[in-house]
Image 1 (cartoon, rainbow, N blue to C red):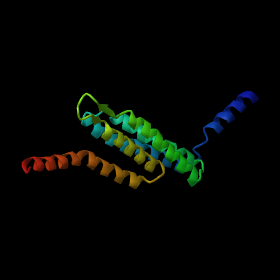
Image 2: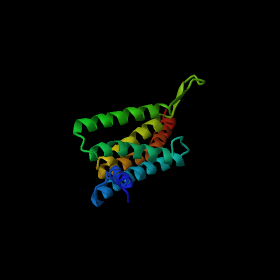
Image 3: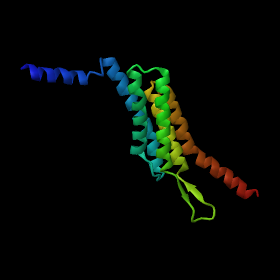
Image 4: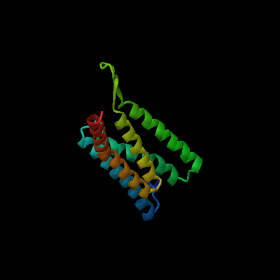
Length: 168
């Protein structure tokens, strides 16, 4: 191989050398897959209920949030730098969530739609950050709690409203 192609080959190897060994590859894979799967679980629940943000949206939010914190952490960023990254993720998700919130002014009540979806995307991003930082157990527990809120709380509210209607 001539010198020019050898230099190209060495440069390409250096460009793809951010994963140094099998343990690092495993760590990155587990964290990113964990984020995507947990986001997908919440997204499936939302999609199953006919909400706008479903499986793909939740998976991408969780995966993106995990990647945003994983890369600086693996590069050796200090806690203050990671804190700024997390702040940026939170702000960015705030803008995404704002796009899901609609206020219907045709009603006299001015009914707001999409607030739970926005909060769910915010929670999904937090779960992704948790998985990306290597806090997998915390991410799983948070997903289970969020899933319980999405699934169980509507029945609790319905029961309370039913009791309120029967006992005016």
